[in-house]
Length: 137
Image 1 (cartoon, helix red, strand yellow):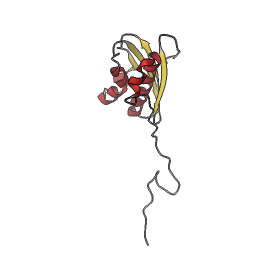
Image 2 (cartoon, helix red, strand yellow):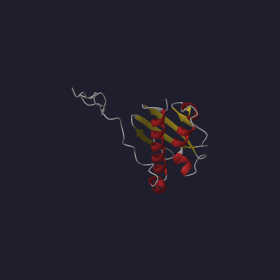
Image 3 (cartoon, helix red, strand yellow):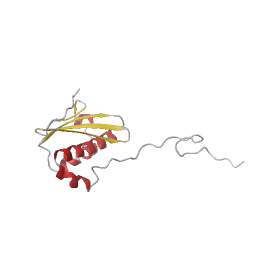
Image 4 (tube, rainbow, N blue to C red):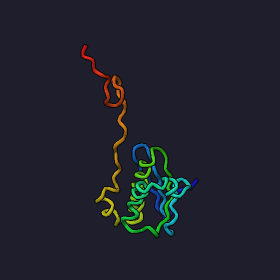
């Protein structure tokens, strides 16, 4: 288990999407070490290019692929939601390191949490909005 502590040379931030939560620790390094729950990011996200590209959007936007190592702890949700939670946390971590990146990340919406979650089921209905079949007689 990775113990996350804040020092001057690192940044720790969290992000969320649906029920997925992510904590990202950004450390100066070579950029080759991107660990998600103790595994390489490509292994954890099953070499899915969409998830990996989505997750590293902030890193690619500021051209820091080879400057920082990333340690990520994720829980809850599916792989897609986890990748989006990591994207938010990584954006926040870069802004924590470099406040001047705030405008760069704010414009494409990388600092905004997507608030859409599953709607609760209501009584008298089968699902959140699906009603039982109506019978006229």
